[in-house]
Length: 121
Image 1 (tube, rainbow, N blue to C red):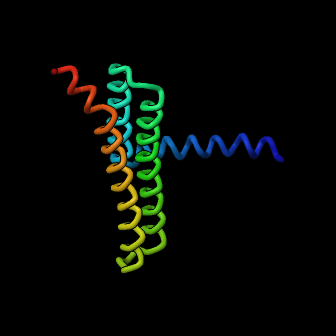
Image 2: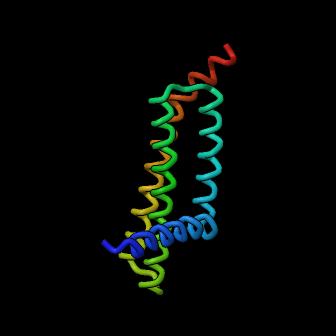
């Protein structure tokens, strides 16, 4: 194994993370919302297992959004003109983000809503 090449690969990954935050407003939005949800979760003192679900949901949405952006950018590079195939690739990637966001809302509803409601009862 080439150690220098291995270490460089982390640099590429961090570059990708920086790019996704600077290029894609949706990634920024998901990170902001995720940070707020994480802060609320910690303030509400949810259990460790619940916290793992919340963290998983946040990462899942951000990862799906990053993959969606990568697919969109690659599709735009390959296909300048609009085509059925390009639309299918982009729409399916967007659907993955939608499903991950629905999952995150479900996790939030199950874990956070009861605790928030208990503050008012």
